[in-house]
View 1 (cartoon, rainbow, N blue to C red):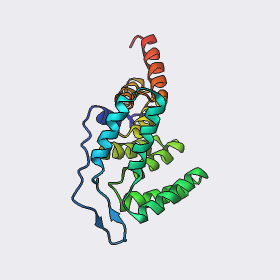
View 2: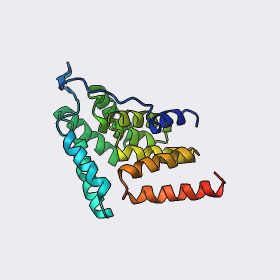
View 3: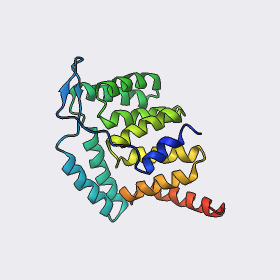
Length: 199
């Protein structure tokens, strides 16, 4: 799909500019907070260093859970409540309701990557790859190390026949999270397929 590839190529080549945080969090007129990266960035950096050095899958999974817990902290009770409702809607496959909540989340808290990430997941579940990739683009601008978003991007690229770009996405993912078994497997399959096609 032509509409899917340009976004991912820009991300993979580092052409997508990061979204810059603008000062401390501020309250909007709707009572929600405009969220910005907080003082946990040093802790996240440490966790990512540990993730890269993890010697086995179980250790890496434990560290990745800590990273996801850190990412989930929105700093806003309003956003947290909306995320709970969105997740419940996703679990029950009420995707239209989930999108309503997530549209509100990304409007009220555009610097909260997990809102964009969950919305990308919902679009992916509905086979709307164009919208999913647009949301993944936002996630990776906010958090370039987001291994969940990278895995989603790689899966979309593979599903749409962009095997070289998918392999590049998995390679980048494995540089951040070397012990992710699914990414190892998918990267190996793509490498074998491309080698068989003389690429």
